[in-house]
Length: 110
Image (cartoon, rainbow, N blue to C red):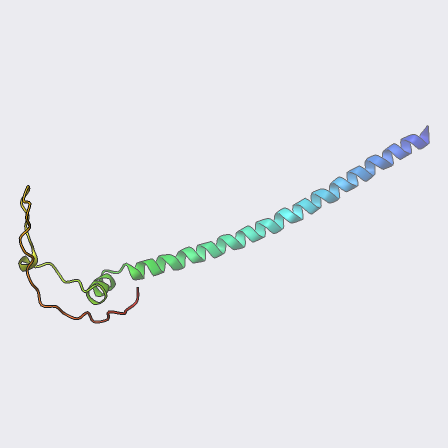
């Protein structure tokens, strides 16, 4: 009778020990996953900061105006270049002829 109780207690102790080992293993895996996630979060934050700096630099009004003039060959609006169209007007008046200017850099960056 005592032998059965001893075997039962030994079995319970082994099960408890295995559950402790499994819990420690899961804890280590969770901690490693947390560390990886924190490193990824730091990398994403650095990427976000870098992209915000690039966005501010690219959206500066002076830069946009320079690209509009050089790459897109855009010019400011003047009264001589403005055409007014009345509501219901079917035929548009002829466009004013402007001298053609060669863009500064046709094959520039995009």
